[in-house]
Length: 633
Image 1 (cartoon, rainbow, N blue to C red):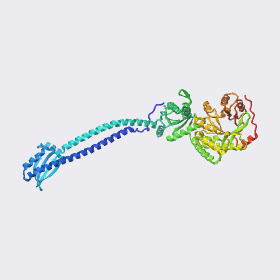
Image 2 (cartoon, rainbow, N blue to C red):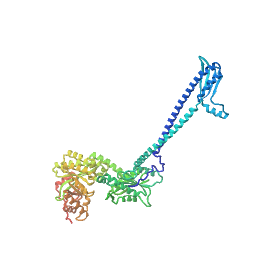
Image 3 (cartoon, one colour):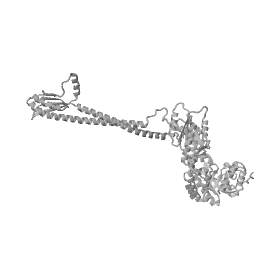
């Protein structure tokens, strides 16, 4: 598995502070603010309470002293008034006491501090600037004799407040330290989570390569650079689903990891490889070697898959289809480039897979034409523009017509009669193939019922079924609806499926085919020899016939590779008690060889092209003698 490469969030952009750092800063700032507000509130409350207490004590002292001073004022005894004031020495907070008579003249005075030099006096005056003054009337009975004024110092209160502030600050600092220690632990956990989220956001867990999100960021950054030139290669593995189905998804993931490492090794020096998802990869090539063209890149990409990969002790062939787009010629944005590469990749896949294609604008025009054809085909299914032709299938020994294969045609309103090759691929790509397959089943069943009513009930009708009808689990319902609607004999209906369609989900398809067999229908494998041709599948699948693909019949002679292949297929089928149908018989020589190999049935232009139903009836009625086979050489 390739090593993980750190991804910069944006080219040329400063990397933002991590979430963990921002959370740490926010937590500490919040804690400091909370401690500051709480400490300030506590100090204000304590100071207010202490100040009120000090004033209350001073007022009480003034009331007591005024009672002692009243007789002295009444009798104008200054000495007695002074003695009463001297009692205030026991209260260190009282800095000064003054007794005024009823006229407001000073009668007696007490100062707690002795006279000081001028400098000390100045300092004392500054210190006592915040004295609390308490005024208490001096009365005797109802007579107002004067007033006692006390100046109470707040120095003790200020010292207490400063000590409380200091304790609050120390507590806040201690709280911050404790908070920092706890937040640091949380920060580490958040940092780990952040790294994991970053890994999930930018990296594919299966291959270790960067993912679609990272690819889009890189492409967007590169597209924004002036005078940038780079290539985008979109690689889609061919038939990779077979690996998952046959070996399991864990094995498929392991193989994807191995493939990702191989691609990174192949393109890492000149670019970067990403996994988009599923079985799709993209390579962004930022610097080409001297003289290297897009064709060189395509051939280099395909070469990565030319050699089978060693996986779990076995050599496994893996192929891919590659689409190539170049900046700025094929797109100005990341989305446009990926769409162009995707269009080219599907061109490569439709051209036979295991190849590459370079995007050009004609592909878009073809896509538009395909979309228009898809819309027209959907309308054709509603307007009854489709028709079936039937190619006779013969018993090769007696050369009697024993059945037909139903082949769809489209009576296009402007283009005339279209063969399947003109629209089947479009139907498969758009999903219309399921609806089209259901229509063919219904039409073929109605024709078989009509022939049965006309005395031609011995003719079976073979109908091709698509892989999507199997995958969507619609085949059973479509067959039952066709039989119910037409009243056809299910024993005279034959379902034909390709090897690829059957092995998509073997277990489910075995069950589905078993249900069709219970209906009395026969099952044939079409185009045998062009797929995996697995003997284990032949043993498990409830099939009745094997159809030899026309590619082996085209050059068939009494010797050679095609003869050996066809002989092997016929021998295998006979050993498994399966009937053999040879497709594409066009010459008497081919017919002679097939008879010699003991192939039971055949079809091809040697006997007849696909015909409308009425022409098939006429052909059967004439009981034409088909050309005699040439002697096998």
